[in-house]
Image 1 (cartoon, rainbow, N blue to C red):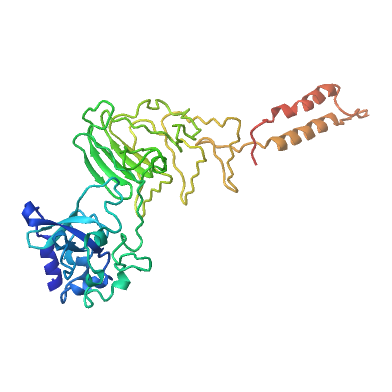
Image 2 (image 1 turned 180 degrees about the horizontal axis):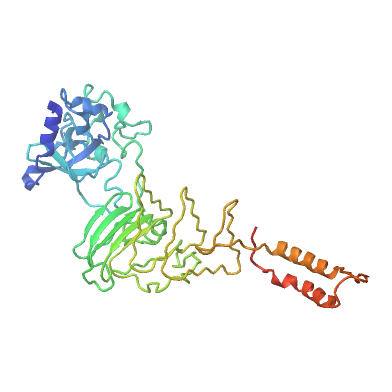
Length: 417
């Protein structure tokens, strides 16, 4: 193990327990190190140290440096276990870990998860000549990082949240239920660990993971982010995974659900026996615009103790390189609602039964052969001692009647080749 790896391992094993309020302080974020290409790393990395250990660090100034224009931004590390990055101009609390290093955590109030500061928090708080904030030696590469911004319109060099982050104050905070653990990002993503988020407020452990807030609440001008908190909408949020139990009832509707609560999904589960009326108990919901399940090297196996079904407004298709094996212990019923069933086998065979197989008769060919046979019978001439007989049998009309009925043996619906 090299020196850098050993040092990084030692850092990772350091406990990050909180200290008392006396050991922590409020600070303002001047920049965030996002990757190993950041030039700020050059000011802190020592020989043989991995640059990656500084990714996620922030450059900050203490709140008590308000009157010190000569003070320089310092560095603080993210928590090892959970990293939630602040933005430039946001406020953080910095504390010491077991090694004596500065570690930061986001803090302060917010009316929306998206941001909790103004774009000019630094410039309005640190009243001084901002050209002194950056040492020429330490911040000579500022133009590459985005800390400095144009001041052509009297805009501060430290204003803004970063190079490309754009604030969105329409993203809402989530409401809580008693005892909840809630992980909430600034982008409308969240994971809720709850047990009482059901209509009965009965103990029913539930996990809800969502990727993005519903457009219905994002775009609602009457639903201000500064006055209203919301709950997850499993039908309209971006992509949702729900692990439910007990009395948590999934308010699930298939398809796209509009503002009035109606869905555009048309197909009903007609053939699904015992379709559940209430979605209660231990269950998992995965709901999104598109779902892809892939098994790269092994099997894909589905088990169901009870019925399972496929319900779709579209078509069902199966494209296999191999064959299809079906083994059932009951009848197979197919109802096409007046539409065709086509088996296009090319030169392949269709076998009905599994022993003593015989060829299937071609209806049109058989009809033609029988017609020719009846015509031949009707045109028979026999040689007798007194000479050739007259043409055809005396019951010729009977054969004609049979010939006229041959078409009735042909199916009106089913065909073969």
